[in-house]
Image (cartoon, rainbow, N blue to C red; front, side):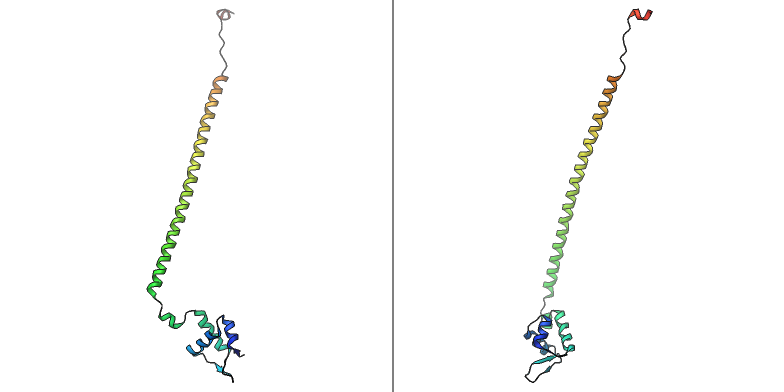
Length: 141
């Protein structure tokens, strides 16, 4: 199957000029038709897809400032670490609040237990049978 430049460009998602530039630059084997336009075979399209997949042209690779890339990576790592620290700090504060709430709840429960024990003791004291005084006469009876 033979494809025209415009069909290949559409398939790769690039302009026709980019396809023409890649053909020249990477020596993609293509025939030209009688009007001088490229005609692409499936093999040629596959090669172009590889270059499209790489995304960075060879001349761009030569001009990449690797120190700048490393600095950007280090900055991103620092930001990620900071974000992780922030998340952990937030979680610790949340846990601390939860623990404080639970401690307050436990203290209220303890106070309630003390109050109930006090009420029960008071109730027992009031319920004890009163000793009636016996008069001297009842002793003799």
